[in-house]
Length: 245
Image (cartoon, rainbow, N blue to C red):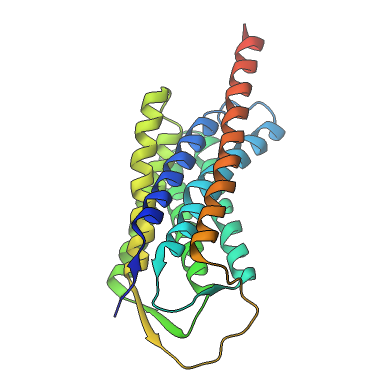
């Protein structure tokens, strides 16, 4: 059975960072189609994918994981946790590049959405596999499939929004919706969890800090990074405007 309980404040915090990351990514993504050199393309895609994948998706995921009370101590395998972070950045980078630098073909958005969504889902379940605890995890098949569908749909919508919005108010409103979609995928995947307690001895190699400490630390570091990216995006936009004038 899924007997996971949640700390409401940390759930709220996971949503806030997801919205902040989504808004920052939308601000950065508009530079991708306008980039005139490959260095500029790579820089723009990297910035937007770090904000979207690392900020809106992975940080939300990790804070959400620590918001969950599994009914037992939980540690995290550092290798799998780091792998999930890398996947969270690579997946949207692929989608942002495919859609942002496309020739407008009808298959670019669906392809980018599918690859990004499945990559995000892979990140989520890799992060779940990183949990070290005295329980065996399986998943409800229907809810597992639903989480994949939500991930692909959310990724497709996010990629469309990234290149079709121009106003700040529109981007902020879209970030709110994107935050709901990202959280929807994560918590659907968490709700799919079925735990069977075991008596196996746990390895002493995992990261085992208090859930609150890890959640607040990730939130603080991510918020600072997103703020710096947002400042850079604003500076670059003003600089480009002066050059064009």
